[in-house]
Amino acid sequence: MFRVKICGITTVEDAQVVAQAGADAIGLNFYPKSPRVIDLDAARAIIEHLPPEIVKVGVFVGSSLTGVRDTFDELGLDAIQLHGDESAEFLAKLDKRPVIRAFRVAEDRLYEMTDYLAVCRRMGSIPRMALADALVPGVFGGTGLLADWKTLRAYPTKHWHPPLILAGGLTPQNVGDAIRIVRPAAVDTAGGVESSPGRKDAAKVRAFVRAAAAAFDLLE
Image (cartoon, rainbow, N blue to C red):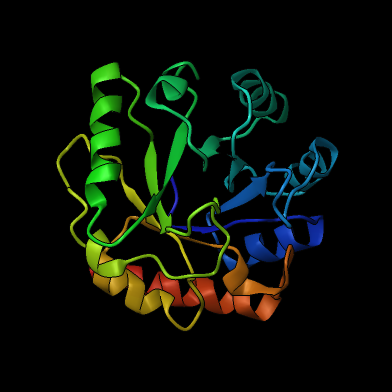
């Protein structure tokens, strides 16, 4: 779906910075407790000012099934990112809408992620991509802490496993090393390119996209 995603976009101006920098995707956060939360009107305005090729991802934590489906359909999003405790059954009820399932992965506990994906496979609801973030008890992401790269290097590559998105504390300074070590299909950042929560720093966004693109090119 994409290689570089900038999450937590809250303004049209920031969305345009991200698009001009060459990122493939943006994240629009609908989690009420997030400092980057936006409403439907703000999301609609952002989407209207983006090129159609930019992947628009809605981020949800603990939302109702109806709420997720209605938001996806009303805004014409490209993917749903589930960042809470949503079950494999929840994914199955999204009726084939593209899903990115986020996991908070602790050291040496990759099996929690892979076991969940195995359940999805049995139910016919494998997500389009799987995102790995840092584990902080009681927090659903956006902590700025690094995910466990050593553990995530062992993410399986069987034909049915969804491509891995690496998140968690990524910045322009460390994203190249992260890609080299973990070898994910994509990377995702929010706070690592901000001047303040919810506001992107244009120079950091451009540096992040450049560094990520260069590192991905070396993997090919």
